[in-house]
Image 1: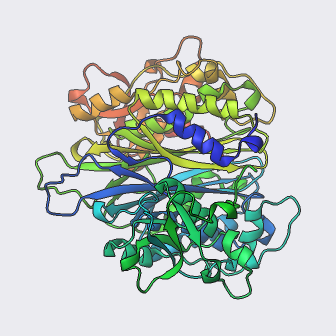
Image 2: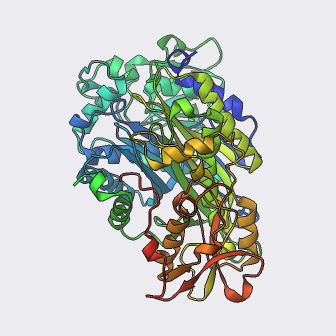
Image 3: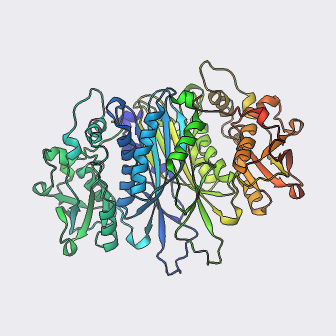
Length: 313
Length: 313
């Protein structure tokens, strides 16, 4: 069997099983936006809030996630970090440290690498992230940008995908389908390639991450589950359902659609970094509601199918 | 200018400068084996020893670091983690958590990916490392294995490259040139490719990491600086000299040469993960000594030139 048949999610499942049980200091390992780790050095008897370490990693590959000729390198760097920050935000956390790996062919322009780092640095400074290392390697052909980001979150503010309960409302920030509406077709390119090119026109400005909003939601302790919408709105809700062992009814009339985008693009487009979170009905005032968490057999989200991007399919 | 002309070390320097000053919580950022980070949550008033977080990352690329037809995937995984553990060890630390990124083309065999993870897991278990996440991405052609490893070290056991002083002796573990002696020439391959192929014959067994020894050295608080020898013995000593602003005299008669290897291979081969550390003369009893740290203008190491592997040259 090859990866094309097996699929990315199949591979992740396989790896998770292969890894077996992790030690008690791992609060969450594989399977959420971030790994959550209890630090040995922390003493819960302290009056300061107990903090957990967050770690997430994301890799962008030329001709899979972006085309070099159509890419602003500043935006590419910005985006490579943004996707990681969005993962930390979705856990209710604050990003702290990042390591950046760049792979490039021998003849690659130093100037472009500089531009790429400028994009990374711009966003890192904005979010008070220290870039603390990395690796530079040669590749035979394609450019690779890989970032691992650490973060921290107070134990009581941690939000995972698995806390949603029947009766909770499904809330979102922002609008959906914006990056997807700008896509244009490239032969043999993955959907992600098409989508990113639209986003790259924006010089980072459009690549909005909801770090502050996520933190506000986490600190208010209203939400029961949270995720970012990088793989598309429907896929994100499905992931919450899977982790929380619930179903969801999505109200298609209530999905906030970006100007010029279609409902289809809003539901499946992805490449935007909005928050999708669940809140008990009594506490959801002021949030944009797109649906409700329901019990087994009562949902409509399964019928919408997960059409989010799978790297190997 | 392109990367080929610029060189890897040039690029790292450039990036370091671009990053500018990091915050006070960064004890060491770019420029050593690991980044060393002060955790906000730590309270130095506690009686427990203050611990620092370590993070390191390393990426292996097909046709640059290994050839797929000659590679045991178990060994490849084992090695990908080993190089990171060696970096944590060289700081005096203990590895804790890792995230693993695998990039592979669509048609790549799942079985081989499994073997690769088996190699990673075998070593992770042995060293009590939790694999806590990662990323899987499609690549157009080449296989990529990228690992970020976290570790921790008590503040007083931390060993960097920069503490060596004139009069210290240069000590090493093990022997040198072993992996290099097995190399055979491949047209257009980087030195690293050639070297690794030899090492890959060993099913992980030969890929010895000095984690316990490093920890012993760190806890004894005898050493003034430490590094691993992954880029070759001469390059490692040069890195200590550069960071410590000293020079070194190496005694070529005292370099422990692996059976069947030449002095040249022992000095420049690399791909072995021995420790190179400096110890004040009065405390060096029992260690294998290969030279001495000396003041400016008194060394012979500069003449031996850094011929360690540069990815872009």
